[in-house]
Length: 434
Ligand SMILES: Nc1nc2c(ncn2[C@@H]2O[C@H](COP(=O)(O)OP(=O)(O)OP(=O)(O)O)[C@@H](O)[C@H]2O)c(=O)[nH]1
Image (cartoon, rainbow, N blue to C red; front, side):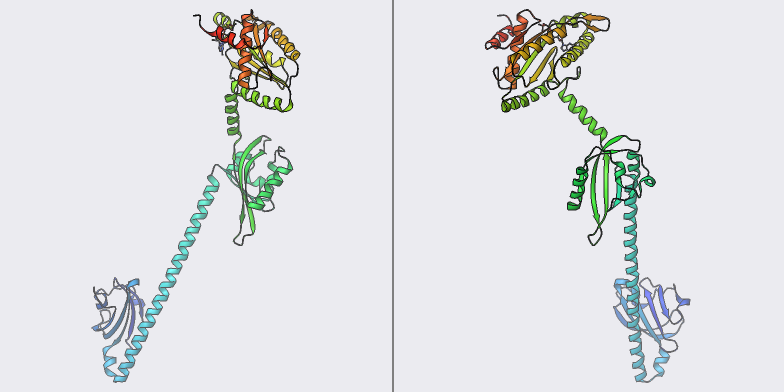
């Protein structure tokens, strides 16, 4: 490039990014008036000018690189060009062009590597951000998380795991989840779980486990098999929730829906359900089944004279006495006010009803101590039997009710088997007088 030839890389703003030779004194200086920076300047060209920076008159060649906002410039001093022959001038111009192209290529390579570095930094930053997000979720989620090797060795647990089980990470890492086993599941349960995990990569369900303090708890867990990039099994990750309370709440709700809150006995819905099932079994096995409808005698007067609370206590005692009088397999239900029903299954002869009815009446007639009061209560019982008196729960209930009304009408404190025609009698009794 001769003694005073130069090459430059200049931003569109005019700032010098690179200069050869002697780049240091010129770095960061500006060439705002350069012709190639003028608006509308051609993409490449030549011009003659006295250099702003060192006052040397030169012939300039440039090429613009608009996508990078850069300009590549090469210049030779005019006196060197004019002093030479035509051949020398041509050689100088060729050299200038070659140098300027080399500069363009160099600048492009620099830019490309800068861009690649920026992209790599961005990707790394994204990956780090995702990692720290995952770590934060692991730390703060309310779900207990456990990560194990494929052989079951625990690699990591989160704080929620510690909150549920009572075990810190230091206490469980290196051990296996077997330390949580409650003993409530058969080995076949775990075998089936791992068989499905190996086959499908997932298992979810409920497991009874044991906390460090020995207490059993029910967890809902979802376990996934994690594979590496080549598809090789790498880890198991389990995410679980303690659902013991939830399940207890469900049980309470279910119990409320099918039981009488005052006595704890099955209510009408549960009684009818059991009766329907019982009838199916009785039909299949050719066995008998019976319904005893029990209504307390003059219970209203106890309420009216001693108050509703005493009436409640009496109903609770009646419930206990009825329950003690029957077999475990029989159902004692309270279906309303002072009305109780006993469902007797697998009864093949009428004497069973007679014996039980006597037993119930004598049991209820024994004095009941309710706080400061000692009371005696009687009851009337109607009995309807399957299959003779009806083949559905509704009909058996209706007929037992009718028989009970007949027992009441006969003077109370007695039992009565259903006979055809009793229903009409009972209806008449409940109708208002004409
Ligand atoms: N303490 C209490 N009383 C109830 C409850 N449910 C209904 N009762 C009352 O139970 C009484 C039922 O009376 P009835 O069966 O109609 O009449 P009774 O006095 O028993 O007369 P008979 O059945 O004809 O012998 C009514 O006074 C109801 O208010 C309850 O949960 N607690």
